Structures are given as C-alpha cells and as structure tokens.
Image 1 (cartoon, rainbow, N blue to C red):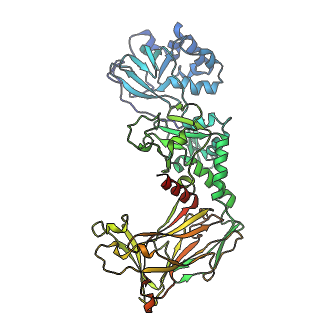
Image 2: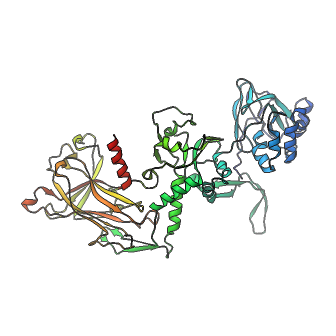
Image 3: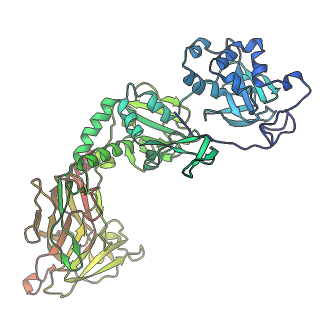
Length: 575
C-alpha cells in the first residue's frame, strides 16, 4: 500500500553524544570522526559484524545493501542474531519484508541516544516507536546494547530484539479482507492516489508542455476519512474501530436499507408565500436520482458512521483500551461522526476475542452491530418551525417568533422552552390560521407525529385566558401506489383534534397520530420533500365557542419513529 511520506526536520548535531536526538544540517553529509568505522557505509559496518549476520542477510535479500550503501543519511536499529524470529522473516515476500520489518528499523536523519532522550521516532514505513534513555536505552520495547555507532552515511544502534510491526487500523481492514471482505470493499471503493507534487522530483517538460517527474511520490487518500471524520491511517491518532464480520455487516445492511426505499418517481408540491403549487415529479428516468444507489450508499454510510471511536473523546474513556480518566460517562460511546451510542457495553460485548492492538489504536472484530435504529439511521426528526425555508406559507395569521427568557419563564408550565412561533389570527373571531411546514430527512418508516403547543402563560406576566384549540393536521406525501394527495384531499388527514382542556396551562406535546411513509425522500434533492399543515378548523364568533381559541403557539413539530416511541414507553415502565 502506498502511504504518505512525511519529512521530519531536525536541528544540526555537533557531536554524536549531543544533548538530544538531532540531525545534521545536510543529512546527506557524512559524519566524520577519527574511527575507521565512521569512514564506512552503514551497510559495510552492519554486514561486517558477526552478531548482525541474520539482519544483514535480510537486508541483502531485498536489496537494502544498496540503499544503506549510498549517500542518503539514515539511522538503523539492528537486532542481534537470535533475538528475533529470523526464519519467519526469511520466508516473507520482499514487499512484506521491507514494509513490515526492515523499514520499522530504519529512519531518515540522525537519531543519537543521549542521557536524556525521550522521543518518538517515525520510521520509513511511517510507524512510530519510542526512543528513550530512562532506565536504560530502549527503542520500542527492546534494549539498545550498542549505541551511536557512526558511519559515513548515518548511525546505527544494536538491539536485543526486533520491534513489533503493528498495522494501523486502515491497513488492518485490508489485512482481514480474506475473512471480512465487505468492510474492506466499502473502504476500497473510496480510495484514490494523487501525485504529491511537493515531494516529487520534477523531470523534463514533455512535448505537450506538461511537467513530468523523474521520481513520483504518490499519496493515498480516501474520501471516507473526511466523511467519517477519522483518519484511521494516521499513526499519530488513536482510535478503536468496530470491524463487523461479513455476517454482521450483511445483517445490519439488510435492516438499514428498509429505511431508504425509493420509488422510480417521487412526487411533491412546491410551496411559496403565494400558496401550494402544482404537483412536481423527480424521476430516475430523468436522472434526477438513482434510488438503488441512494439505498446502498446511505445504508453503508450509516454502518460506517457507527464504527470508529476516537480515544480523545470523553464518552469513550471507559473502554478498557483507552487511556483516559474515568468520568462517569459509562455505557455510552461517541463515534467520530458525532453519533452517540447508548448501550455501549452491549455493543462491545460482541467483540470476538480480545481487542487487537494496532499502531494507532485497537480493532474490535464484532459478530453483531448492536445498534439502535433511532440513534444511527432512523432518528427522531425535529421540524425547524422558525425557518421560513421550512415554513414557507402561513394563511390568515401573522407570525411572530417569541423569545422566552429564563426570567420571564413560568416554571409551572413544564420544562423550559426558549422560543416559539405565535400565529396571531388576522381576525380574532373568524380567521382560521394555517401554517405549512416542509418535512426534511424523511425515511421510509412509520413515525408518530407530535405538535408542541405552548400556553400563553409560558410568560409568567401573561393575563390572557387559556383556550382549547380545535385543529386539523394534513400531510401530503407519496403513498405506496405512487400517488400523492391534494390540498382538499391530502394523503393523510387528522381532523377536529382538541387540545387537552385539563392541561391548558401546560406545554402540550400533542400526539397527532401515526404516519407511515412508504418511500424515503432523504437524498433526492433539497426541494423534493413532503409537507404538513396545521390549521384551526373552528371559528370563535358565537358565545358557544367562547372557550375555543384560534391562536396557535407552536414550539415544534416532532416525527418520532414508532419503534423509538415504543422503546421509550418500555423504559418509562421499567423505571
């Protein structure tokens, strides 16, 4: 795998026993002392030692005798004979031997061991190891038995063992591709290579006037790193990643995709301040969207977004492999995508064996993804009633957004709400205010629809009499047959709903009813979405309507997945 090549600048060294690990001003300039070895190359010195014949044999096998014999300046950590599994490394193919063994023991520049050294070394394969002199000189987990041996093109240290190569999490995904191929295939799809112009060596200009390069350095990139907010190939970050088996991946995928069903055509209404327009259509035939692609990509993105846990996030400190303070946030995890996962102990209980140590964290192979739908792919939707983009049309009323300060808030009405929209009727007696709201992010699932009504006495200084509201709620979306309703005959209608007369002085999260969306709208386009309208359906012009009002104060609309509502009710009963 081609990886980024990082260059680490250091300060010039005056002597081999300088006060810290340093570099020469020109790392290709040979360091010179009076010893004969300092006039020889790294390869000549290493290959001449009787205690390094096994290491020298492996270097020679892959042509590293030439690399350590040229003018480029390196530091080498050479394991002694008999201190590492020579036979296993000798059986490796050349690419694996170089990437997973030799490059772990070679670094650019001069790393001199001093009495106070405590530094992290980045090797040629971009791994990092601790170089320390705390209770003896060590590199990684092994003692340095002979240090600061000079050569004309570098310095080498002799160790009592070979450092362990650990893949980073990204590399490990592909190491497991033979057994867990689906997660590897997902990441591979978004991998690309690009030319690192800064670190490539320019060559001649070709006949078409294009720059060529005599030594091209390619950088691997993956757009999922940005999408998931996790550079799992970065050696300087620490993560735990859940790696589902193919069976676990498929099981989750099959469950999630049911929330992203698309019809070949999707109908919707445009709404402006002038009213509801004529029905419009987005279609696969017109290449407006690709339903199969949306289903597949969104389902996989939901899986990917639930897998990576940064060790720096306080919600993940309770994991055994995370070196962080215990903060009381037990049994909750937070992914790098910002998804909060409850039931963390249940999630990690599906780990197969023990967490496997990586160079940048840990991998947990899991036989199931114990995720709650409403936390990952089918969330509760809260309608932003304050935005005119979401609330494009109001009839027979003026709309005011009312801010509620904690000082003015009447605590007897319920939990604090900082603002609401006030639909003030154009006529106190005859107007029937109606507000239209777009519904964003709709999945193909069943929701319970709630309207959050606010009483006038939310302001403790209010003297207005509280009144019952009788109202209708209409929704227009595509039904299972691909049809959509009209303004007079909507797809779904709830009529003559009444607010609770016994709780007129309370914030009322009013359950309108269940709405079943057979098709998803999320991902099609910004303008293609269903709508809901809330309308007063009773005039108040006669004495018998004196207890009814036509003024609505709305703090929100909520679409809560039915299974989430059922879960919350069970939790309430359990408590």
